[in-house]
Image (tube, helix red, strand yellow):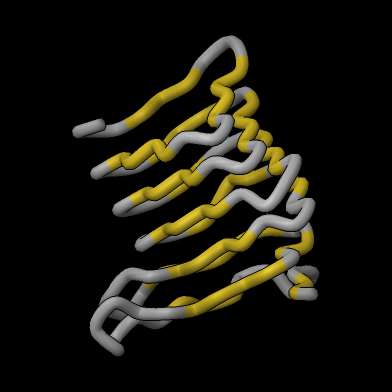
Length: 117
């Protein structure tokens, strides 16, 4: 998908497929991922993000505005380049990977309550 994905009113379900978004993901409702992949080239700002299995989330930009994140056995990989990006999430990351695409990526944890298992 090219451009920004905005979900309003309802649920976007990503099952066993991959959704590639070349810009941001903005959502005030629910995104669910079972064993699929959500690949975001810039920022993710969602209301509720629910992973019900071994799903994969790749994000190159900021993680913010996620009011509820259910990680299950998912893996979240921050894979962008450059500095000045933030992670602001009050819930657990089950499997967290910081893997900058060119070795210059840097994210700042803006929430003291973030926990990583």
